[in-house]
Image 1 (spheres, rainbow, N blue to C red):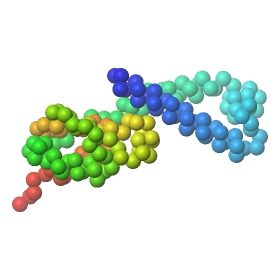
Image 2 (image 1 turned 90 degrees about the vertical axis):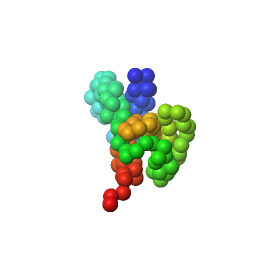
Image 3 (image 1 turned 60 degrees about the vertical axis):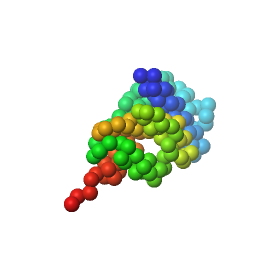
Image 4 (image 1 turned 120 degrees about the vertical axis):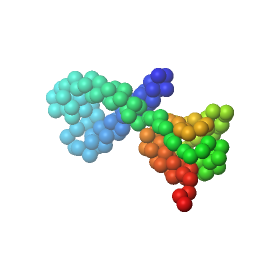
Length: 160
């Protein structure tokens, strides 16, 4: 739950930052608006007192966003993790991740690219819980789905 709240707060900051940049661009591109008139009662860019509605909208989006974008997924492999360990680590490397740490139960990967780390506000890590099939991947949905397919294909026994 703590992780979820942190992700929601980071998302809220990210959404508000994007909104602020869009408002600044609109003010700069529209001659009849100025920064002091963005929320003005007469002739403002937004309706009077709409800042609270806008803030409530972004809070609601930020509260939902982590539940939609961060997942935990089972990955069924043939055999045990140790049989395929090098292949799996290589797949993560090919996808732009490096092994950050490992213990008896889990491997923790982080994105190599700074741009990916920034765009995900430091929530770029992927955790792989090892052992017998299924393995569990947890992290950003888009990456987890891609990695699931790659790991499943790489660990499949060759057909005869």
